Image 1 (cartoon, one colour):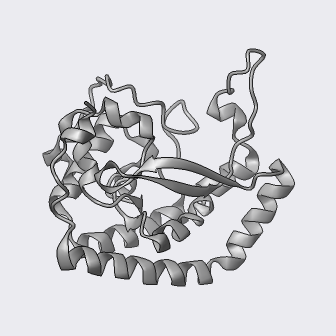
Image 2: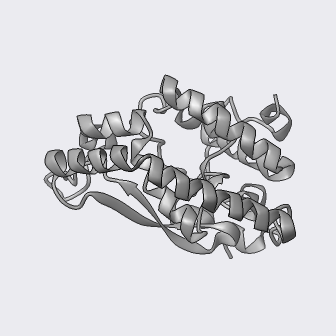
Length: 228
């Protein structure tokens, strides 16, 4: 049985508060798509010219309660492989256009469509890979008690510069302390960090290394520390 199967029924986001959150999400996503349309079209053109087709990256991810949905992003990497047919490391496949899109978070713009569909929120724990579900312990699995988001508490407190243990501690703190006011704070801080291009990479990696379920480091982090 996977850890997500043992997770409690989603609690903090239900009833009228969930309805209000999703209404605000969809209104903001619709306005965001309209406002960023020129930037999105320019980014699409840049990806098509530099990497060819496909322009969009789509992948199944776990949502609230572990329910799968398809997330959409602009493609930032080449499908390059070694002589054995294995994908090259991320840092070798990531193009200059892709680096720029990630540094400016323009690659995330298509996710506004996922928000309109109700699969994703503007704010919440980032949806990770489906295969990670069976690797979570029960506490880590609680990140799926709420809607996943484009940005979140972990993103404004280090993003990919965090270890997995730190990231999960921050996600759990968000689940336990969620409010509409907290979401607004996270959105405002996110805007500032995007402008400063903070927390894009994890040390030694172009992206986060794989989560194996056995991460042990000296920066594990706790829910109490996540609140600081």
